[in-house]
Length: 95
Image (tube, rainbow, N blue to C red; front, side, top):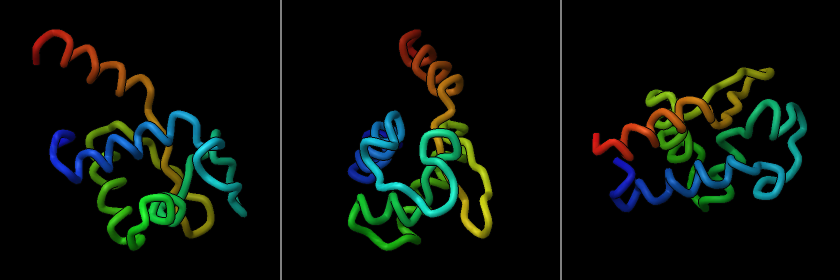
């Protein structure tokens, strides 16, 4: 899933969300570090429509790599560091 061309985009998203303040502009509602970033911000960074960004973010959230939080009418996404570490350990063990 992460080795396909679209997987590269997902890896980029995960990398950007390590330090959202450095990669995304301030948001009107919600703190990018504490609450996460919106699909709009990710779409702008990727240069794609919001629906495309939502697909990538939704898949990462479904895998448990991202946590979601609703603020007003928007979903904010941030990394789940515990789950990411678990997945990394599985790959290290030759999963």
